[in-house]
Image (cartoon, rainbow, N blue to C red; front, side):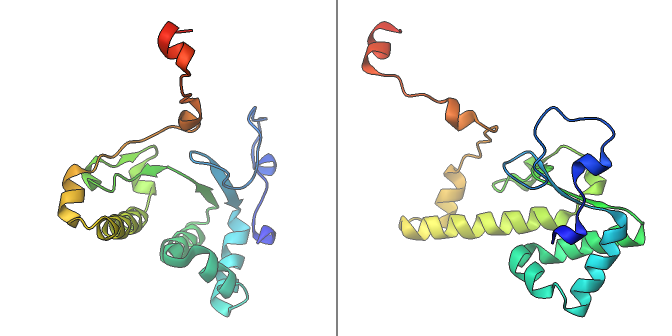
Amino acid sequence: MSAYTASFSEILSEKIENPIHNRIIENYCGGVYIPCESVSKLLADYQSGVVREVLDDFFEQNLPPFLKALTFAKEHQLGLLEATEVVEVNPISLNETVCYSNLMNCDRDGAYIYAETAKMQIEAFAKAQNMDVQEVMENAVYKKTSPGEADKKVKKGLWKKLFGK
């Protein structure tokens, strides 16, 4: 797939202080960039079957929004940038979803897929716990954590608990 992508160092005029990985490595990061000239080729190669199996397997239920984004980029002569958490879907209450971009640039289908996946996970959890799905939904709490936050939670030892040191 690297034949269709460009390195960020090729498209950015300024040096970025953080390391550039050119792929998704964690939440809140950019992934690959598909330049305008590669968008049409990737879409044509998908439609002709050259990369169909690779994309079908990789994107699974997210394939339709990806193909929609490729088609939009081709029609408007744009490149396509992969990124995570541009839209933070609150699966418990979609009305409380947060967007860190112009929401008009984001496809709603991604949020719906995320919510449907969360619903299936909640249903599986409820079944495993012999609980009613409605009971789980009423008691569920959506808690957002920032990158590295879980690592910062250090358990206090006995001496710290007793003496605060």
